[in-house]
Length: 383
Image: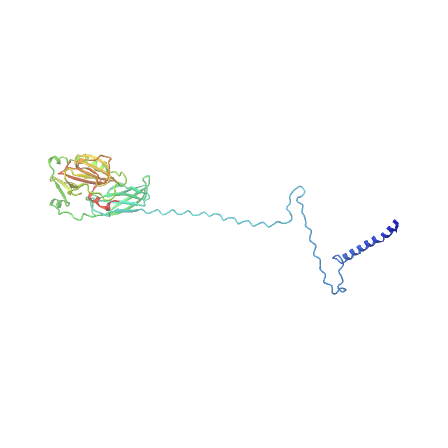
């Protein structure tokens, strides 16, 4: 059956207001039973649980403007993390005390041998000196020491054949490069007489010394003049007495000729019955005419020629202020500036100059002073 349009509206109208009213009632009931409604009376509801207080509302965050009027920046109100503590300042550097310089090494003085006889020599060594130059003074003579290496200075001293017995002193001066004295060392050595001498002759008893009386033929005795003696001495003791450098030899020397020992070093001499005028400045070895003569140690020839009194001869520089001379030769086999080893033949036995027969007059001269050659055959004297 068809309904008219007016009847349909009349049927629908009473329904929707009712639905709206129901929804409103439900919402109102829910609102009255929530957190905003009045609390229930505990007497009317004895078994109901205790009311739960609502949480406190959170405070609203305050936001500061990022900039003041005019554009000045402001820091944010929210505090940032605390800054880490700054490290403590480093301790102030303390000046370190300057290290003490190492102690200066003490120089050591060696004298060998410590006991010598009149007319002999002694080796002088200074170790750990730390000087640019060094010199030694003894018995009125001063001579330079030579540098063997950075730590050793070496030289020789000597005493005359008439040196007094007893304790003698020497002084070593240590110098800088300008020759200024830095330090001094003092040492002692002893001079003792020779252990044995032949029985004295009447002349020796009168002179209180051994004397060798030599007889020379008239043609030879005329050579013994002061003028000739000055020529010989200048060549042997003055021109060839410098310290040319370190020793050129090592170890004991050798005998320069095979023969018989004759006139010793240092003995006093008289000629043709005259007074004692000097001592013997070398050591004589009698040998056959023409017999070979050798150099006693390595060195350099500095003289090869003839002298009025000593005849033909050779002088060899061995270094460290030490020289050797070989005289009265019949022939010379070397020339100046030749470098020789020990045992090199330098000439032949003869009897030139003031001589009584074939022999070798062998000399050793230390810093311009003649000494006993036989001592140089011993090991203790050498470096």
